[in-house]
Amino acid sequence: MPGTTSLGIRYPFQGETVDQASWQNMAVDIDGLLSQLDVLRSTTTAPATASVFRASNSATLATTVTGNLTFDTENWDTAGYANLGVNNDRFTVQPGVFYVCVAYNINTITTTTGIQTLFLVGGAIWGGYTVGNIGGTTTNTNVSTSGLIVAQAVNTTVQVQVRWNGTGGPAVFDLARFIIIKVRDLVNV
Amino acid sequence: MKATDSQFFPYPENTDPGDAALELQVLAESVDAKLVSEFTDFRSVINRKVTVWRAAADLQTIPANSVQTFSPLSSDLVYSSVSDPLVAIPDWSSSVFSDADPGYFRVGLQLATQTVGAVTANSIRKLTLSIFLSNTATFQIDSTEVVTVEGYDNGLGLQYQFCEILTAVTNTQYSKVTSDFFHTNVASDVNIKATTVFWVYRVCDLD
Image 1 (spheres, chains in turn orange, brown):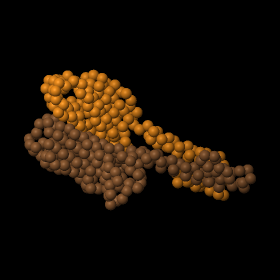
Image 2 (tube, chains in turn purple, orange):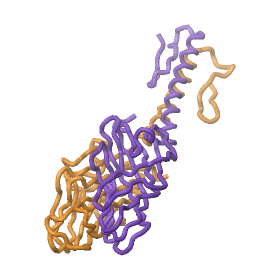
Image 3 (spheres, chains in turn orange, purple):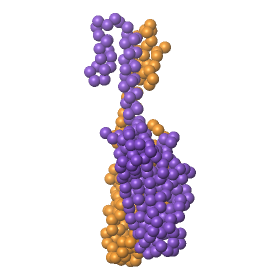
Image 4 (cartoon, helix red, strand yellow):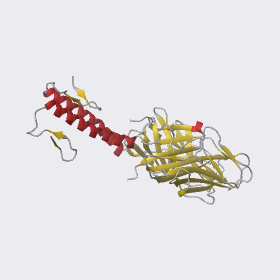
């Protein structure tokens, strides 16, 4: 019976016959371990990430009305988080910790008291960012924010909900960009 | 025995007594040791240390024109990749974390607030996140990093503010995180609301 190293690489004990099988066993075991290492290397150098964009009419909302930003362009998606042809307002992720970033432009308003940006995780408000006291005649206000989220369940949706408060409108949300980067799985690999 | 140039994997010379089993074992063990090191290094990067809290209920009521420190509760822990969260709880404002694994850490906060009663129009909401670094556990502060974000009531009920710091922690340093809030809503107090999120995670090695 061959011995094995801590990682399971087989080798013949002293006194055992060293034959073709001895070499094949060791080569196969090393090959398997290096394949596992390739996966880890790939995860390290290229974390799962996706970026989606919409140049115009990502959302059109009257004052105080909430709505989700929508997207029509997939800039990149290394893990299948986006499926804009089915749902154009979300990433769908598996359990893990993620960093999310969003940026957009809001315009065609008369005056703005505040703009609210919320991250929805699994359809529920996770956290967000609000801008206030903008005042005056407002065109082309840029908003951006980011944060860390935790997805606990399989197929968790991640979305951006927006709202504004003021006069005039409806407000048009343009140049919307939404990015997600995986920080880690919930369990160690 | 001889060894390869870079990884020093052993192999027999012509003058070595023939013991193929031993030679294969030695080679197997040498490769194993190298692979164990590689797996450990990659996993330390992939399995980043992360701790996240999210307030399950309102945390604190803060009067106007008064800087108040606030922090998550132990029961607000949503996820931690380590058995002891990176920042000791229950009070991250007075806790100290030291890490035997130096590196760059990102500390962040998404704050949710709301007035208890009436709103003072255009009143200020000011969030300050501070990291204090010390070379001793008794906390003589050797350096600090502070981020302050200031906003105004926006008439949308819940107000949200965000800030984040990237900091380097060396193997000789202890660190303390505090979050402070200040407002000028004189018409009523302001609550630190449920859904406020706090996080700490290790980004990478120092070099």
